[in-house]
Image (cartoon, rainbow, N blue to C red; front, side, top):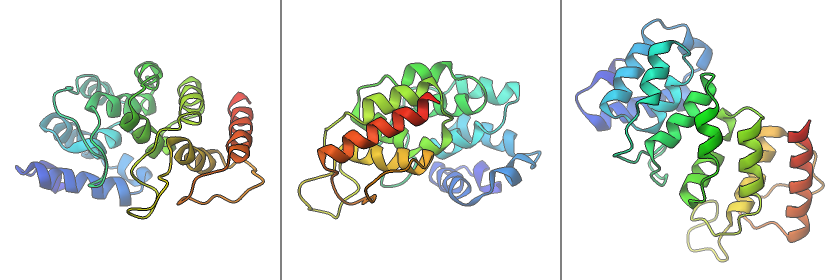
Amino acid sequence: MAALASPSADTREHAARQLYERCDRAILDKDPAAASALAKAVERGSGAAAILLLGYFRDAESRRMLRAVPSTKPVKLRLSSVPVPAPLVAAVALAHAGEPGPLESAVRTRVLAEREFLLDVLGELEPGPAMWTLAESALGDEREVMGGAPSGAQPRRRLCDAAVDAFAARLKPRLSFPLIPARRYAPEQLAEARAVIRQHLAQ
């Protein structure tokens, strides 16, 4: 936690990423200094991980800090991630903190990198209007993405393929075909996944 106060932005971002990937959220929530340390790190610029972690605290100061996240510098969740606007990350965090409005607007994005990010953090989202909107857009988006397949492999995966994997991991629907993260899904598999995921989200 002390590394979040480092004068080095790289050190702060690395520390936040380690917390995000390895720290039990229940333990983090019990640390009385965690919210303040994360809020200061977010204010100084510490990447997407610090912003997302701050969303686990519902106090007024944490929510105020998330609403004030500037849009001047894009942020990454992982080193290999494509940068996305910090307010998009803050919208996910605010929804987790009990303010779903910004996320319900943000999920309407048509920017490929932003949709990829939202799928990457789907575990942070609760079923509701925002998740439904993301499912409807991402499961029908056939634009190619960079990740998910070996380097140089053709054809590349599409966002809809990544969406099947993300929603299957989040909702655990019963599908008749195996999930294969490195390949494209056939049209009939995509159609089945869309129908089953819609059914889950409508419940």
